[in-house]
Amino acid sequence: MAEAKKKTRKVKEAPKKKPVVRKKKAMPAGRQEKVEELRPVIAEMPVVEAPVKEVKKEVKEKEVKEVVKPVFIPTRPPKPKIAGPKFRGTGRRKEAAAKVWLAPGSGKITVNGKAMSQYFCGRKLLEFYVTRPLIVTETAGKYDIFAEAFGGGIPGQAGAVGLGIARALVQMNPELKPALKRQGLMTRDPRMKERKKYGLKRARRAFQYTKR
Image (cartoon, rainbow, N blue to C red; front, top):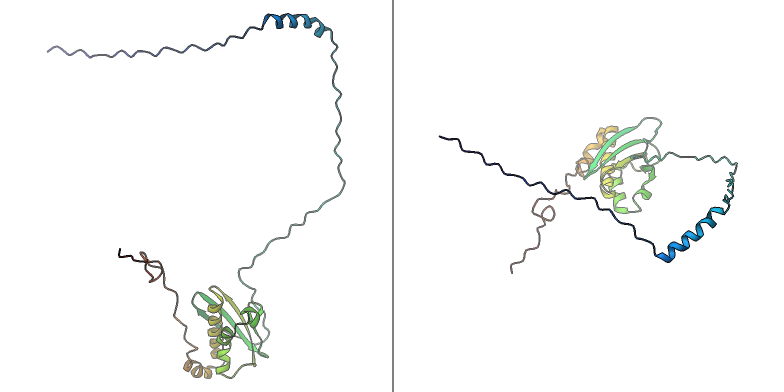
């Protein structure tokens, strides 16, 4: 069998584009004559250099010292310095946590370096949550309390400080535990906000349903 001849396609080369040369427009006859008349006059004119003005910058000789103060944003308040014996308790409520130190004193309560009424903005209910363990055990006005609260909100921090005070009182005197336990002050409140569920608007709230 004779081998089939391969067909070769001839590729036509694209014609190369020639560079475009733009022709200069000829000047009108009248203008050309005027230019030729002025050329000898321009050649005879003297070349005058423009005066160069020396610009001096006035520098005021004043030493300006920039004082850069470091910006320090404390995430938590400094730990209180308490002299003498002290008892510690830790409390939690919702997303808040509190460290409480209890020492013999005149009944001063400090939260994050501020007075209790100032920190809780005069909200009597929150102050009641804090001082309830002292009222139940009849120890109000006998001890100074220093608390460090962080996380959560202000109501949650109040509950955390109250639990911390109760635990510190038990550490100081274990005989106070039955009275505190009877009032439910030794139990960590487990109630917390539920997580959001997929397909719902919140933890249990569903989107509005329309039948028609």
